[in-house]
Amino acid sequence: MQFSRKQLRALTWWMPQSPDFARDAIVLSGSVRSGKTLCLGLSFFLWAGACFSGQSFALCGKTVRSLQRNLITTLLPALRAAGLSCAVKSGELRVRCGKRENRFYLFGGKDEGSAALIQGVTLAGVFFDEVALMPRTFVEQALARCSVPGSRFFFTCNPEGPDHWFYQTWIKPENPRVLKLHFTMEDNPGLSPTVRARYESLYTGVFYERFVRGNWVAAQGRIYPFMQEDRFGYEVPEEPCARYAVSCDYGTKNPSSFGLWGEVGNIWYRIAEYYHDGRRDGARTDEEHYRALEELCGSRPISAVVVDPSAASFLEVIRRHGKYPAVPAVNEVLSGIRKTGLALKEGRVRICRVCRDAWREFSRYRWEEGKEAPHKKDDHAMDDVRYFVSTLLDRPPQVAAFCIAR
Image 1 (cartoon, rainbow, N blue to C red):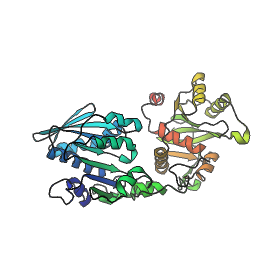
Image 2 (cartoon, helix red, strand yellow; image 1 turned 180 degrees about the vertical axis):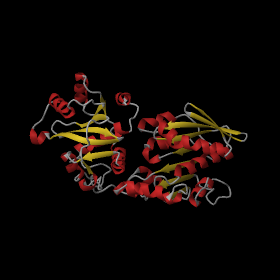
Image 3 (cartoon, helix red, strand yellow; image 1 turned 90 degrees about the horizontal axis):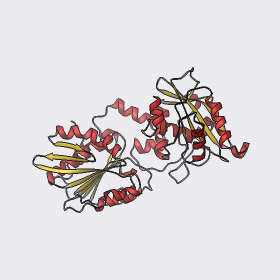
Image 4 (cartoon, rainbow, N blue to C red; image 1 turned 90 degrees about the vertical axis):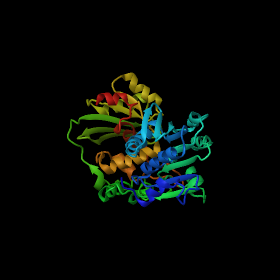
């Protein structure tokens, strides 16, 4: 395995001969695919095996599932190749380095309540994967558990906005006890120029600055600046499609936007839409919106209708009629916008030219000035597109009806 100079520094910072040995923490921040997680994960386990035996450590991600996917799955083969013995149990790793053996507990820090999960344990060190996605209370509770002499902290993250608590607390201030390394894709020797160019082409705007250049910048301007109809507009494919689905952003006085999607060759097209502005054209009842949904779908077999999770009454109407499987949307705004931008750039979802209200909103959808949130205007078709990508495109386990239909 080949490492860059910056990766080698992260691998060896805790060794007595390293100029960074006196530091208590290391933060690797920067672009995606820059090799941060693998090299710091190796560093964490090698440090624990070299310095401790019979101690407990914490591995923290936004969720245990994401931690297993992003860190554990890729790291275990590298640890075994380095001569460490690893035994995986539910929520725990036991790693032996020679005669030394330590326990590594897996924790998910997805919300403020997660801090309670880590209370009471005594730790010799903690590793945070994508720490910027975790609440401050969880991170600080985990740090407070590191009371064993010689304990250290390991952090990786992709940048968020400059007002983020982690940037303000750990990266911006000068602190000689913290080693801060900025990573870009050039720091990963395992990434070919072709693959690097592909990743660079996928991101635009704020996400390019954050995930390619690795900068902590504020969101501003258009959210999907690349979405020009002459480049990303498509004709409706010939039907029938392999599958159909609908995504709904629901409003009474605010506009309601429903998108009808059809899958052709593993690509999803937004082939038709329903858009009703209650302020302009008069409010409609849930039953009237449901009849519009039926008209939009026609006789097509619908795998799932994903609905704004706050629209409980409309979800209930769909379920009561029993015609379509209805599920609440995954509504994580920032991650959903990022996933949607990638899916649009990659061509995995395509917006047909007949969707006039969606194209109108693409040209106007902007970040709220000074905030990490979209401006709440011209965002209804944008929300239903985001619901589709976040909830149906990657088919999380909770969308049981959609998975069964496949």
